[in-house]
Length: 126
Image (cartoon, rainbow, N blue to C red):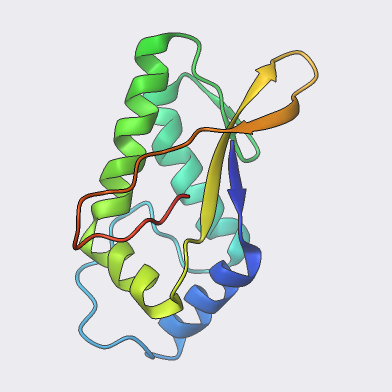
């Protein structure tokens, strides 16, 4: 699951629309900037391509290979120059990741303890 910081996403969208971030690299297709919901859907759909399926903010890998692919894709998103520029501008991660131990009730999300990217990249998904 991705646990979004909605305030951070609103700050990102406002900064983009107000041209508050100079010299932005090209925007990847999965970063949608029309609304907070659109922003989230873009990233979830991009993860879903390798993760087996999704529901709302939950990507549902069915195998360890799909889970690994989702984590790799999260890292790819995280080190993207455009995403890093957004992260630098807002000064904090804009989401955290968790997994559900009980797939039936989707209760008790457990943090994934994601490893931070190598410097100079900043953590986007804590």
